Image 1: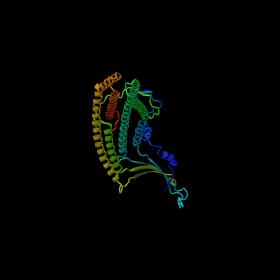
Image 2: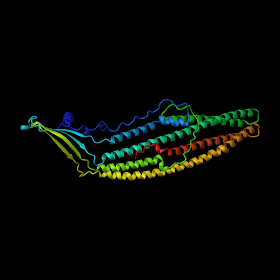
Image 3: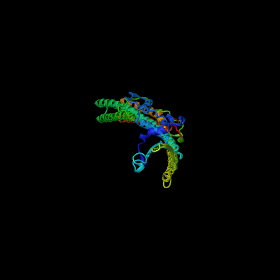
Image 4: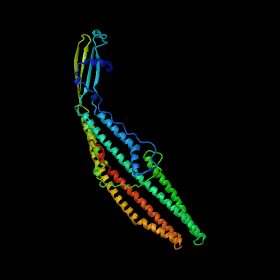
Amino acid sequence: MHRISAAASVAALVAAFSATPAAAQPTASQIAGPPAPEAAVAVRTGPLPSRLTLAEALEEAEARSPALAAARAEVEAARGRLRQAKLRFNPVLSVDVENFAGTGPYSGFNGTETTVSVNQRLDIGGRRRARMTLAEAELAAQEYRFAIARAELGQQVRNLFAFGVAARDNLALARENEMRARELSRIARELVEAGKEPPLRGLRADAALAQATAALRAAEADEAAARRSLAALFGVDIPPAELSGSDMLAPPRNVDAVATLDVRLAEAERVIADAQLRQARADGRLDPSIGVGVRQLRQTGDRALIASLSVPLPVFDRNQGNIAAARSGTQSAEARRNSVLANTQAEIANARAALAAAEARVTALEASGIGQAREALRLAQLSYRAGKSSLLELLDAQQAYASTQAELIAARRARAEAQATLARQAAAASEVDMGL
């Protein structure tokens, strides 16, 4: 038997089956398969707004983030794999030429027999259904990963914006402290020159000014670094010139750990493990192949139909190892789901406690702490100018006021970060098309 190129006998096959009814022939849609997925959304480029609010930062992150673009591409890849999983096995075209170039009556091509056949592998073992189920579960899991990437991006934006707002407020506080130290140094020098203060007090005021100036330079660097870090999250080199507004968010009222994206993803991965087990079992079943063809005898010019059936014999390989591995994979996925749920519950509880503590600190400082420190500083300044208190007492009042302001800024940042954590956990899973 000699097998030649199938392309050389396509015309023969078409002629042999020219009598096939039109209704029995496959349609164009059946051959083409499902439609191709839509193109991915283009990533926004160009400079950021010079003044950036939190709402604008979240919107810019959605449109620019390279990480989100990569996650979106992974979803499209999973859709492509689902499209591929829905396709059936391709038929096999065979052309066989027998009894030629021999001896006697089979010399040359006088006794040639040509057979053109089409063989089709049947899917009675459920392989295609198992492939589709697995691909659908993987697509759902990838959509959850995309939603998680969006939620994590939002959390990162909120945290970095809170860091930037804190750096901005610390810079304003450092400028205020530097101006106050500079004015105090000027007054101290005048008092020393007038003989109302010893020279040591003037040196102490100059040292306080040097410390305030150094703190101002550090605050300027921190503020610029915070804006650069936020811009890097968007994949942009040039940061916004200013962060505007507040880092305040409306905290989510209820956060159900079971409904969080992380737990939903763990459940989707458990479904994937179940689908892999079903696929492993389907791969162990028998899929026969059938064939039909036409044979032409050159000597007589006659034609005859042929049919074939082939079935693999599961003597050695029944996919036992893969089935056992997939069964263990389902147990592992169940354990991971329980672990993710426990960790998520703990993270939500910790974030709620941190938010309550930060709210209490902010309320206490805004209600009385800042006002008292500001009033104490005002009185200390008046007393120092009147010669009723020393420079050290004024410096202590200034330090107390600056410390209270810094503590309020830190408390607001801690509140914003706790809110961002809760918002990350409360990200709506309803936006994800589960398909499970």
